[in-house]
Image (tube, rainbow, N blue to C red; front, top):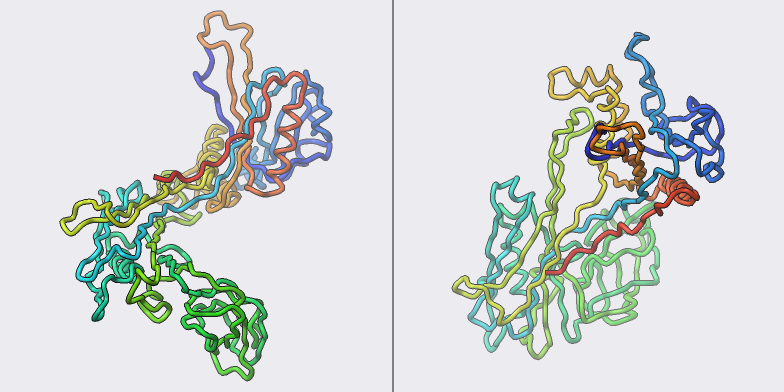
Length: 486
């Protein structure tokens, strides 16, 4: 019978595809070559390979030292890593798996202008679920925040929904149980729409001053113009503001073409810089601190002023990670993002849908992370009788002797990779009592996403798929899925 009732898998790390003819000994670490099975020479033009020829896919070893110490009896470490002999007519499938960018889970609650009558409070519940919460806490978690600390002035009928959401959101984000898992949305957790808000939307025409102290600064205030509360993020080099600053807090009440002066970060400027407010908008994002501070002025008549607001939060859990020196294949690495649910409650604690709309998107983990690639490569090393020593007091010393660290250092564990895969079946013509007719081998070639290695692999696999005897086509439809809206 066949060795396995599934495909035997072997993994390769590829930096480039060589087109230089020669012996496999010329392949450097991560260089992939197509080798002619009759000459054992690297083929200069893979596209010219005969459809019926037997070839090998060979990658230069990441091990640059051939022996353990100076003992020639323990050699072969720097020998290139090879596939089995491949013939086009026995290739059954070719496909590419994309890296897929991560996306944090998000949740939001929106309130209209008349959702918070004076004398009442809103209650928001935030649930944190998923593998990160279960591992960290052994249970899912939730907290409740309210707007009880927001008061009306005489004659006011409704509380500004932005102020109510900012207070409830502040309480939720300050909860010690939920704090490791969630944060307010980057760029501002409170989105406000208000008639005549006139928040600064874009900037132009920077007039560079001099005498500033070099450095990178955030939330730098400005003076002048018709509004208030605008703050900027900027960089100072050579005593001057470099390039156009970005808006940190949009403020309100500005007019297009307002000229504002950038207040001095880090010292006294001889000539202050100025910049123009190019455009203004009636919808803008503020941080909770800005809504509760001086960046936004609450409306005392939100119905007349047409105020609506959203509280927006996102997942922010960061797992503990160990460095390469102490890397262990049994270390946990997160494969599921934290999930967040925001919901409205009434004063009895029951779900409330009468006013306010809650929505969320699920998070998406990055696909083919360096953590996955490294573990797959170490498994292939184990199949080649070069196990990764771990779990013992002297494992780090043994790994240094056995050159296992060469594989660990070759992989960017925080990076993202693509994989191109080739499934090859080897028929067993003399196998009268076997259950399985074919031995299958799955070869997975990893390359850093967006690198020259990915481009070269794409070209090579396209050439393989173009062979006349290959029935399989290169499948590149493994598209990254978008987060689901629930």
